Length: 128
Image 1 (cartoon, rainbow, N blue to C red):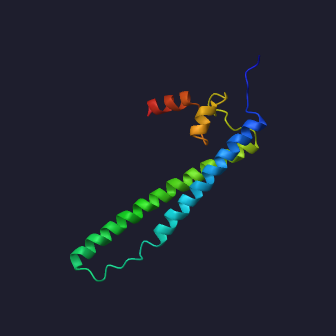
Image 2: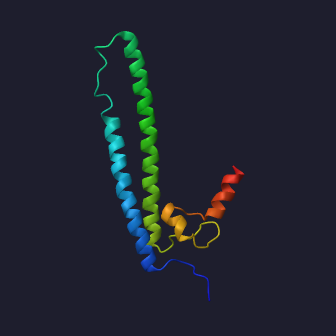
């Protein structure tokens, strides 16, 4: 029996549905973060004393920075999911980009945008 080199169309469809669900949720989360970031100036601090105003402005700045980082991470996740959909269309989804072997289904279900087998990923992490 020969070793399987790619997932079947049915298996790819299963992964596509999983990714589309995750993509929809990720996009909703991104929209919430962006809306929060865009509306973060809604509360005015004009009626507080100068000391509290400075502290509150500092907290607002930190909050904006954190929300900005969170938005960037979420957008990166969305892009990874979109790239996974392209790999599904190209029928290259689930193939480790280092070894050329199939990434186990369990890993892809947990991390649907994975491009490395767990062994390769573990080795890379150990090197860092």
